[in-house]
Amino acid sequence: MSDERNRKPSPEKQRIRLPDGTWGVYMGETGGAPRKRQTKTTGTSTQSADAAERRGIVSRYSLNADERRAAEDRKRVIRERRAAANAQIHERLPQREPEEKKFYHKILDRIHMWHLGISVNIESIIKAVVIGLMILVFAMLQVTVFSKLRPFGATPDLMLPLVIAIGITEGERWGGVSALAAAFLIDCLGSAGITLLPLLYVPCAFIAGVLGTYYLRDSLTIRVIFSVAAGILRAVFTIIYVYITFASPDAGLMFRSIIIPEFISTLVFSILPHLVSWLAMKPFHKTRAERVD
Image 1 (cartoon, rainbow, N blue to C red):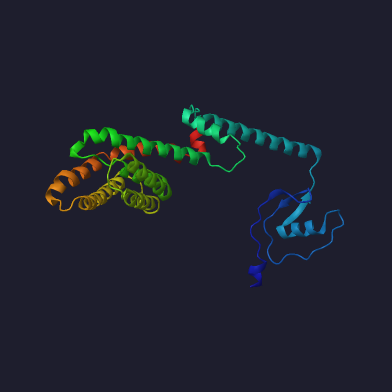
Image 2 (image 1 turned 45 degrees about the horizontal axis):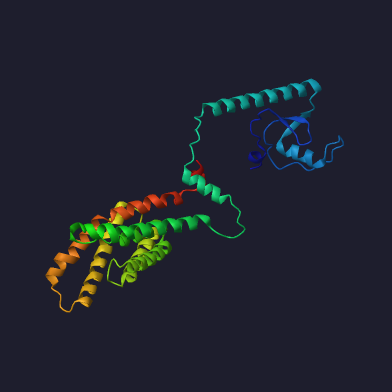
């Protein structure tokens, strides 16, 4: 047992620099227990001497001026070669040319540079303005253009897919607020006699925002499913309105002339609000670095 403990590995000579600034020959780790600390009288500290013994230093010597100068020259040559190699690698890499900023991104960056002295999120204000303009434009299209054209025999409800698209893209809060504003605007313009639109728009936009943000991935299939489900709910609300307005309506005539044409028209033209909403909200989802680049 003692022979295995005192057995030393094969020595490998290697010149190393000691903590005190001198040079020594490294012969490998010494076997057995470390030697007892001894006091040195050569000017070297006791701790450095003891550490050198534990590391296996069997001889030490100091470099003269010529050897020290040669060592420094070798270090300098190695550093210069490494710097030249790194420079060549950097030159070989393809350089990306800076792209020209778009006008919209320049306006956003200019607004971010303003110091108004108040805590205001300028980007959220711009987003609210863009959403408000979309609601106003689609409300006017629904009241003027599509109410006269009446594709498939009924006026499509463009505001319902619009608020659902906003909810999917921007989340349930933006979707709920925009749905409330859209319902109020449509009621004021008088495009539909039903007054229960907030009870339809707000839940649809809020649920679409929650599902689209936390549970489902935004895709064309998900948007089609949301549009079909919203169209069915819109048909239910229309049936309730018809039964409230008329005493005993004909169910077959109601479905042929009102419910089915309105459902098909809303479903077909829902692609327009989804596309416009996605294009309008896309710049707000980029980081500042992406907008600058």
